[in-house]
Amino acid sequence: MRWLLLLCLGLCLPAWSATDYSLKPRQIAAGTWLLEGSTENFAKANGGNIVNTAFIVTEAGVVVIDTGPSKRYGEALRQAIAATTDKPVIQVLLTHHHPDHVLGNQAFSDVPIGALAGTTDLLRQQGDALAENMYRLVGDWMRGTEVVLPTRELAAGTLTVGNHSLRLLALAGHTGADLAILDETTGALFAGDLVFYERALTTPNSPGLEVWLQDLDTLQALPWKQIVPGHGPVASDAGPFVQMRDYLGWLDQLMRDGAARGDDMAEMIRCPISERFAGISLTRYELIRSVSHLYPRYERAGMKRVDTHDPD
Amino acid sequence: MNWRAYGLLLGCLPWLAMAVEPGKDPVPSVMWAFYHKQLLGEAPFVFDDRVRLLAPPFAEDARQVPLEIDARAFAGDVVRVLAWAELNPLPKIVDFQPGERVLPWLSVRIRIEQATPLRAAVQTRDGLWHVGSTLIDAAGGGCTAPSVVRTQPGWEEHLGEVLGGRYPRGDSSRLRLQVNHPMDNGLVSGIPEFFLNQAQLLDADGQVLARLELFPAVSENPNLGFDIQGPGQTRLVLRDNSGNAFEAAIP
Image 1: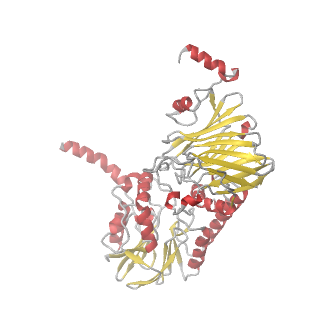
Image 2: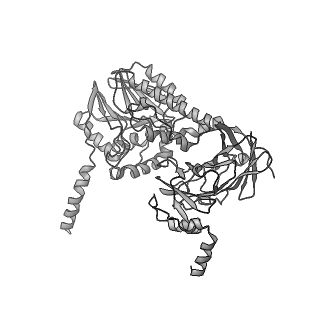
Image 3: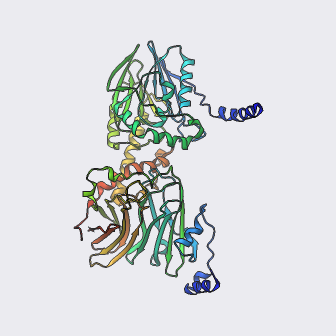
């Protein structure tokens, strides 16, 4: 029996080490650390680490921005924080309810987890289905992961934590409830998934691209020094805003033109993608998804009521 | 099947079809033989990539999967188009019979329950079935998910409302229609089958342009697209399995 146990352990260990996130925090501003994910899609090879999370070490303790795609990621993040500072984690801020940003919550269940009210509602409605889909896409990395709802409701305003003044913005373009955080102390703007950079944006809960474009105006007008996108590299120039506007504008026009031609969704997903987006990863994949999410609205706007009488 | 029956069957078929070699199935399927018997009555067929069956590689929303059936390579020669999703609990999608003025092209949205091969079998005048195939991946659950329509208060009052449009494209024009209907497939607990099962496209004089039989694999609030030739108003007449009739006129 003991031999059997050892044998099992021997077989399991390599599998375990293959699902190690190896998170390496990188300092991007005073007291501010980034954990940059890849710009790939969810896959069994990356454990869902396709997202940027961050933490700010203040005098009063550590503020964590997003908890990652799985329980195991959350735990690895917690360890990475402990290896960086002696200060305790005192607050988690979630930018929105998507699974890659919130499924690490279990590792922070002893800390207030803050989110916009809309984010909590969305996570309550969709969380289990989102987590289930992550198990399908990412596999064993997800083991033990469950949805933990936020415990503290956030609203727009200023949140002072130790020596850092965090301006919270309640926006909507990506999911209907999107929190952006400007650290007024360092000038770092944590844009959540309102900004994707060099990675195609995702639209499953977007209230509309025009809302998103307005949010970009709001964000760009802030006194930021660095932009931390939800996905993709950090920038200290307006590059991410320029790219986002260009891409959103293109996507909007593509669907307007398609609806005016009477194209069906199956035709829309085959539309050519402009050469200028060649450097952005996953554009075809996300076009297929965005057409599914958004094109029905464009179609309906272009059609008229044509039913006549009830022939009975 | 005994030899006499076999001989009888062959005797009924045109000589051309007898010598046809179906070729290799382009998708991995455990169900082809079953559907060949069930839906095509074991009639001669070929796997034929000239029947283009176009769907996304994965279902972003398994309740609304866009599907485009393009048999324009056989324009003028198509008798019937059958489409189905092999691994669906209710596999059949449409039985489409385009007339002279309607191109053998159709767009429709469907529900899928899991990753599955999709098929469109196109029968030409010589009796041969040309089978187009594709595969789609899915997280699943599209057929058993509760209807979105029924969550909207007062949906009954909007039953049978039709949105439509006509879009000129070269020498033909695209007709797009979206019908308000829950298309209940009987798989959601406590809700019996209630779906649109017949549609006819008529010209201004009431002549039939195309006939369509719909099955509950078609998504709720069905979306249909046709390409038709020639001018003139078109009417769509629909009927559901409860006997409700609906009508729309597209200028």
